[in-house]
Length: 401
Image 1 (cartoon, rainbow, N blue to C red):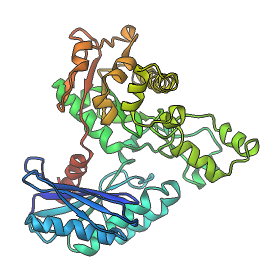
Image 2 (cartoon, rainbow, N blue to C red):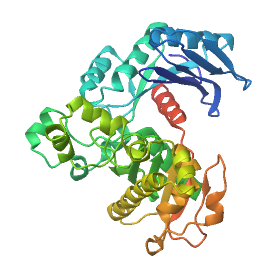
Image 3 (cartoon, rainbow, N blue to C red):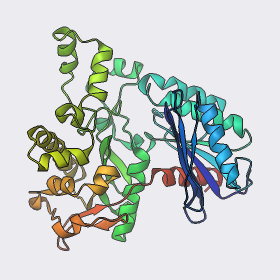
């Protein structure tokens, strides 16, 4: 097995591949990049080399093989190609691991076959994740390939939290249960929050709010996830950029029977034309805030609905945990949108949540506390780093740690 100390992290989507080469000695990025518009005209690869500059390749990438081959060529220019002895493993983000994959897993033919079996419950994500794994295996067949699953951190959900109240035989036959997503982010952020507090993760109860275009919440008790907002699919839970989050299941029947919409049209509506976008026509929180501040009523409604759902989950997860040591905001909106944090925490003083307005307004890329010194519950902002978490888990697996 390679004695290298670097891990290449791949996040393969249907039309894009994000990658980072991470040195596990100190967690630094040796290189990073993004390939866009795979399978379309006008593709682009943006690469950040070790010196912090930037290189671009404008070309058509007909498939993931072409995309990853171009990535490999850029790494080769930096003296860090896929044949480098410094490379210890390739870590792959895989969205859905079902109930079988609850830990980082070395990829074999059998493992790939089981990931394929999960495509019906993750049709938008798992096929692309599989494509990235297959190409990486062909490019470097002797190198350990590790799958790290978005669902794995949530595999500890107690059965009452994981089960939907439908016929058990039907649920079991079609793998219907709550799996949760964004698991690598929730795991990383909950652990980093404990570090910020100077405490052992096993001693800390945390509500993690991962707020990006996709958004999810989790309740983490002593380092173990006991509840999360996404379910069978990433559609359940919070109001998101284009996803509805929680909705009456009867909505589907109503739109089909009364509105005449097909199942595919309803799927598209709830996943791609709902959330902030559906309420006000913008899925970017920065635009929603700008329009709201200018008096736009649709934008104000979208913001209020977003925050209302967020506050409901904070209260619900407080009840689930019983004791909350910290509420932590992360991801693009959570880390950067001070008005969202302010509105989410407003009026929760009775729960021991006291946001400090001045600290909340400070912009920083560092983990930080934004609550008052006397707040019983710490409110924090902790930047997420899913790639580093994938690299850590992959490296630990291949090193047997």
